Length: 412
Image (cartoon, helix red, strand yellow):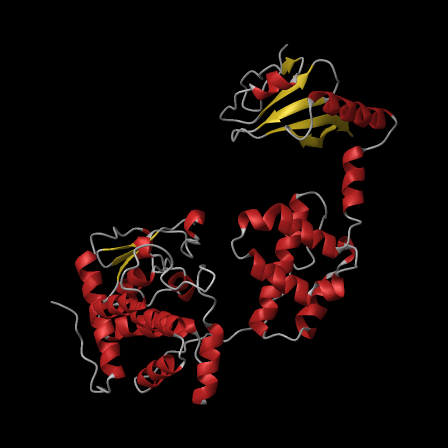
């Protein structure tokens, strides 16, 4: 009687072919992954995924359960090599060995430094646009103490010791733990490790940061921006304040994305332009107030393409945090402000002027308010333009010493 699936439908018979390189090249992917078994070498199969990715596998049974031994991706090995490898695997199985378990055990003998380097090379560079920053933290805070330890030997006690012993702020310590946890999670998925020692360890408690510039601080910081004698960073910080957009996105602003006064940010990365994408991966369109357009024109009146804030090497301007730290040190500010606090100041001004929290979420491309997930960005065009011009006008009034009562500018 033919075998059936769990849902009662007849099971498809195994697809068997005498494999050769041409046949494998011409296998067409389907909507579900499938195997093509070799009729010449027992256990050998080509695993074809819907994406078109193909790999040689040797599949055998251990304790009545199938074990998949990855031989190589198609293209790295030819059929002849794959057959030889499968023959070795099946020979080992007949002699009572478990090649998959042995491979996992061998991999787990590696040091944490080796594992961290593998993670960057095989995963982070391809999937994490902030991998350089994360790798810097791992190398600085973890590899010095864990580098030569077997990755499988690292315990929760080791993680706690790092969390409490590193020379770092509580938020940075939390970030280091998150970086370590990402490496261990990846290793588990790859079959290299069985446990993540970062699990069940609480982050350092953090206070909610609500820093905004007061009315009296706005002109002081504006003058300090000018005093840096760095036109690019000065203008970038002013743009963050007058638009309320994320500092990282402002640094990567492209002139190609500015159309008729609207800054149109693609949600997804555009590698050819060096655009990293928005933080939440959603397209965003924001009006640039006339004051901001004038600032950007002053940088280069004739430029039509490229980064608005380009470094000397042509890439995006470096981070603005150090500039803000220097400004706060010069001003002797007891509660230092960060570039993101300029964005928060803009958002606070939106609500203070009576436009409401939903308007702030729209303008600043937030998702937590709910409306940002569903609104039609063009249907709010007139209102968003009014918001941006009104908030910029109010902030510039403060810059010019007009510190009178805050008026509600909301129309209607």
